[in-house]
Image (cartoon, rainbow, N blue to C red; front, top):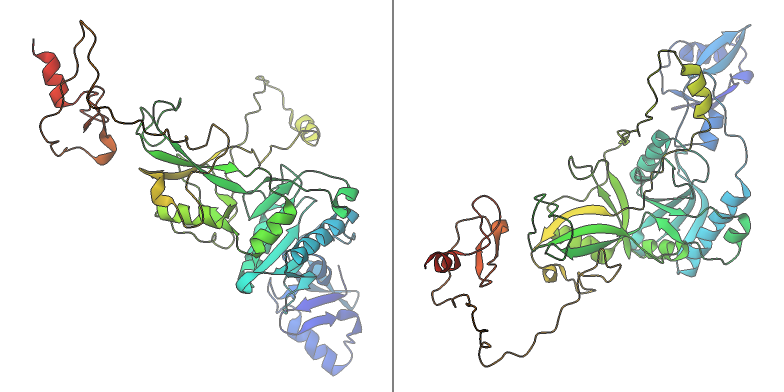
Length: 432
């Protein structure tokens, strides 16, 4: 219940000033009372404290006085001021943008009042980077709605959290830091980014890879598969400057059945962004407005079979359970396969980025000098016949072509009808 309300056309209205015995005030009241629909009237307090998630109201007449009432009962207004940690991190982000050569505004509001951004950074080539700090709990719907409003205003959202289970993770461009005290934000301590920023890694699918081909599910294809690995050594101050300078770009990857169980939002370097576009036919775009990924499978509770109802007990225990981490810090399949990583080499860097052995591109072995002739075969052994005829065109798909296990010439090795030996080597071994 409130005495002030915001009308979408008339603006803020103080209902306590209305005198229903005065003709003008009564005409205004009669034009509103019973004639508004959900979405016409908005709570002033909610609009001020959380403009991205408004609460709608309707009008009532109680004891002869006009008032406004929430459609949703039990509304608790976020009237508490922002915490000192929130304020310190907000100032830290603004200072990082200024140190990188950009200007920043604190508590930047939109002209229509629907948006209030913690830190608005004016970046390269007109980029508007909307930095939001979320150290407390916020629902996935509220995060998605505020991100949609920011994109509609021409902003590129960047959310910062210190909670590994925050609902905003993977639902908007995000960056996760460690939980740190107030002194770490206000001082010059480095704030390492633990999640939300990834590097594109390419690994060859050959005999040195212990896992089967991710595309076929078996064997090796001798091509290069891409994965997104967490970026190591990234600081939040550097990320703010790099995103404002367009050195890092947001990338939205929709969920794909069989590959990714849910959609992903990443911050990737401009070089990796270009390589990804070169290697895939997927169109890079923002998610549809209102998109919320709520299809995460819940972990099984594995409770013993019990005939008694334990609903009340489980509700009491629910508060003590730990939330499931949304930031798993795991490798994310990029969904790209290329025959040669050199095809993705950009002018600013190579396709194979050195990193941990599990995801790095193998270092090329220098070629040995060619000998004048083949070494003599040991006594009692036979050598595979040298190819004396030109290689015939193969009638199999390109992904089924591989080297012969004996002469190393291209042959139909994988898939249906494949064989490790080419026709010439099979014929030479079958003849007595």
